[in-house]
Amino acid sequence: MPRIAIIGYGVVGRALGAVMAEKVKGAKLVAYDAAATGRSVGKVRIAETMKEAVRTADFLFLCVPSHLKGEGLEGAGWKRLARQIAKDAEPSTIVVIKSTLVPGDAAKLQKLTCRRVVVCPEFMSEGTAERDILKPHRVLVGGEDKDAVDAVVSLYRAWVPASRIIRMDAWSAQLAKLLANAMLAQRVSSINSLTALCEKSGGDVRAVARAVGRDPRLGREFLNASPGFGGSCLEKDLRLLVVLAKCLGHPEVAQYWQSVIELNDSHIRRVTRAISKAAGRGGKVAVFGLAFKGGVNDVRNSPSLRIIDGLVAAGHPVAAYDPRMKRLKGVTVESRPTAAAQGASVIAILTNDASFKEMDWRKKASASVAIYDAHGIIQPEAMSILRLISLGRSSR
Image 1 (spheres, rainbow, N blue to C red):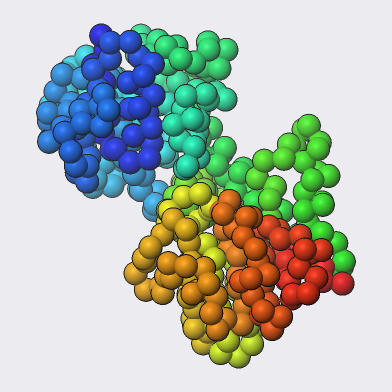
Image 2: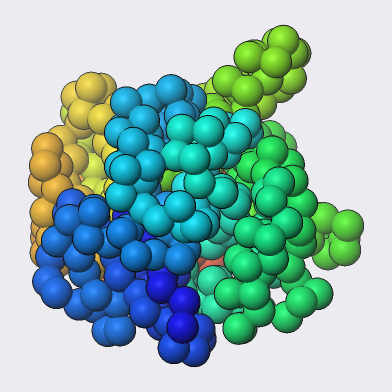
């Protein structure tokens, strides 16, 4: 009966705990997070202190936030965590890193904690985290201690087929995580880079994406034109990759991945300018969608918020509506879409929330109101009597 402790009970920690509680027979699960409340979540007991959580654990899963500036184990928070593990965990405890750190940090953590460390990065999306952990495309288990790697593999074999589990060294496992997210961000920036070309030439970026996505070597995922990528992972992991390349003496590699971030920033500014132009001088903008993507209420690094900041700086009053958010500091958030749209010169659809696809947009806007559709939700033929501006689609 494995004793499993989860440190950090956010999106990853909660999803991991729920799946292990269901799939790992006889497991005793405890979690600790300074922000967590309550005594238990399903079969996962919430500990009151870090010491209580780790002192008898066979496996210690670290699901705490990564450092945005690439500090990794050099950061004060991780050093403090390492000291607590060294002091309170059993000598036989296996530390499993779920957090995204710089390659090489696993070896540093092993030295600081005097515990065996295994890297097992998570490949999941917010909004589908539990499903992604339950049915992963692959599970990477990286470490230098064979027995520790085998023990972690045995846990995952409770629900993951052996063919989907990849054993490797810790450094490579950490780099694989960074590269996976960097390449996803690269795909987003790649398709978004073509939106301006399509708008000027008479093309349709979504038709281009469908055609390219049919190539089995490329696939369809992350080829949807949008206001830009955001969230807690893609840019963070890109920046970690840039830091790693610089530290290892390869500035040309760092600049390559830095250019993906810069292209995303440039695209967000272009979208902002397009909405501002459509609104006219001082025109009100109604923003539909605040989160970094549809279906979640997470606004971390959200393109919508960056666009709102740009619109406000340009002198536009902004009201927002998001079906999953009631309030947000610094932004006027309306509880009804009609209230947000009232008096607006432009309605800007900035997330692909499923509810937006069901809306009758004719009732949301008059003939004098433009709709800026950043996700291709509205088909042009359905809006023939209204002014539709669709990202990546020519208005000709």
